[in-house]
Length: 159
Image 1 (cartoon, rainbow, N blue to C red):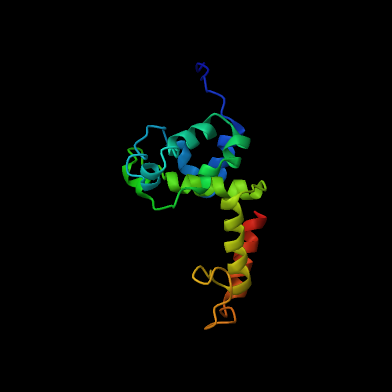
Image 2: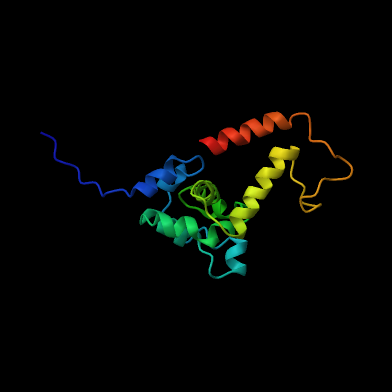
């Protein structure tokens, strides 16, 4: 007879993040602070900490994590991935958390901007950052493939 294995209980939120595209590498992440050193945002904002965000996920603190503004501070430059000794992808984990936050109806400047950019792609087939969301005078109609882009975005939101 094989001895019983003792497994710590995994919070459902951790499983939800690991099941979201981009969140899979949370299983390899150990909040060791190695990703904080190369992070340019961490250098500018001492309150931003990837290990703290990931620690909240591992502790199962869903509501607090998805409502936190620091999810939207990351620029997704992926400098954090270069410093990770376990080859986790902290930027991708944050992307998964952002998806979950948007699905949960998160509000604030970060989620509003993400929704606005998604709406621009859906309506125009591209993002108009230089024109602050107003149609570009050089290209008033969306690209021919914008219907395909809209379908991809709608499918992603439905999942």
